[in-house]
Amino acid sequence: MKPAFFKGLSPKREFQRVIYRASRLACLVISKAMFGLRIEGREHIPESGAAIVAANHLSFLDPVIIGVAIRRPLHFMAKEELFRFRPVGWLLRAYQAFPIGRGKGDLQAINKAVSILQEGELVLIFPEGTRGDGNRLGPAKPGIGLVAARSRAPVVPAFHCGTERALPRGAWVPRPHRVILRFGPPLRFEETGAELGHGDFETFSRKIMERIAALNAQSEGGERVTGDRARVTGGIAATEKHDMGGPSA
Image: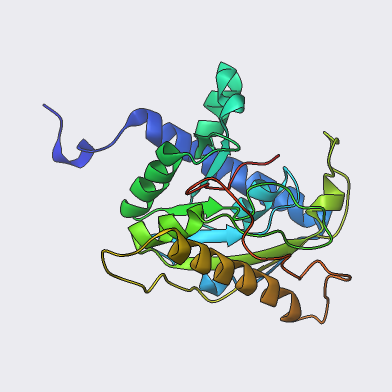
């Protein structure tokens, strides 16, 4: 019979958390030294309880940069193909990742995200669903609105720049380049009622992207991304119902 102290503890899960915490500290040191990582607005990340971190997406490096900036374990989505190779799948799960199908509405991933949030954890979602070109923000997919509506978790917007040059498309080895990451005040899905539908999720997803774009104009050090990167293109793109977004292209 297990002592009460050990009830509910999973050795596998605790081992993964140890790996996550140790590697986070190592990656934070490397990010500060190699990328001159500057973090602003970290006070907007709740110290406990569920929250969604919604960020623009520029590079495969993004989950690492955002993960090291947050002191709590951060779950995130990765494309399902990466989990098919067992060593990679094990490593991704050790870093709190879970799979999502690309180019389709993945209700299993949505349910997983909601379940994690209901346990009081943090989930990172890239509303655009794919890496941007580094010049402007793409439209959000409505899946993040659905997750926010079902979980009622606050959504913390995050804007970062520099990862698209630190690890650009096609590169496998990061290069030194300044990276700035800003978090903003959280927002919530406030609508209620049985008549909520796809349009409500789209509207909230669009609002999230507008908050992410607004962070570019709120630099504490006067640095802004040049060009059109802070503009959200168009409206919500035509997507399959409840397309989640999340994994890199």
